[in-house]
Image (cartoon, rainbow over all chains, first blue to last red; front, top):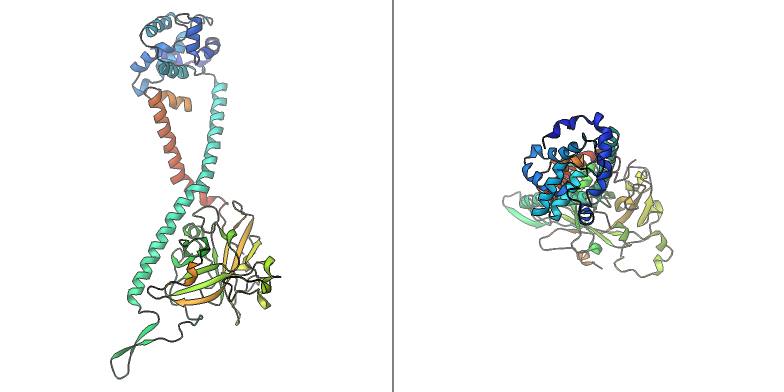
Length: 400
Length: 52
């Protein structure tokens, strides 16, 4: 046990250690078999080792006693069949007492440590390093595909809570949207019902902050509980929290293009299912005081039969013509096709034309797990409702 | 490396296995919650939208 002093001199012990160590190796892990068949007393060291473990329970000395066993064999230069007498004696003791299987295994694996050889050590270290690197890379894939979803859902929940707080505080201040308190010239006030609340071109009167939510998006065909808080901005941090509004594009309900980007496979994957959207599916957007109902435009393959086919929920949804000709419900395009998010999709001009439609555009990665292309969904505004307590747009019930 | 760790874990095999498992999970947690979130924005694998 105290022979560890020789431990630090691998060079001059190499030949001896090889002779002693390599042939012994096979016997070590399979010690039960060796014990049973050969029956030579004291051939392996293992059964004695549990005692050593007990003694060497202190962390500092954990490895040394076992190394000592090897060292004890080395200087003798003895052939394979000649283990040191010390081991023989201890083996006999262990045989008499316990010789338990688990203990044998423990000592066996520890004793199977190959002798110190710089080349061997280097190669083994390199191999372990490569295996470790491979495992880390696999763990990174697990992280990207699965763990980031947990983080993304957490950030989305935080953004939703913040938006709910904001809306609750604004509703305390602002009167009901279809009413206004007017001060009469002669004194006193009167509550008037504001006309024209269906005007879709009303001015937006809420501010947005990059990274914070400002609207909620419902897609009833994905389920009654499918709601996402829309974040301002499309930086990485914005998209981690939810679908992000391309800054510079229009806001919900405005003429032009309300354009959003979202992840498809990780970071919460808000746009995971965009491939399942059909023409006329409702995309309902809720702002602080309005509901906007968009519907997905006809798909390109439906254009020929669109006029002659009955479509439920399709009032106001037509195959686009004029400056919007060629804008369909779904488009697969390249990542650099930025004009799809501009006021007239496909036209590289950020100015909203006078006769512009109010569109919504959703963009996400395509195909799944790939950055090679983008899937674009275009929808058109068909209905606007002012928010009222207890009112929900009937389109939210279109869950089939 | 792993042999060195194994030899320096105290206790019988079952206890050592448990310790090794705890060590492994600790490393995984470190990767998931510290290293990967730091590393990820530096990698060009996170392009969501269309860019002009």
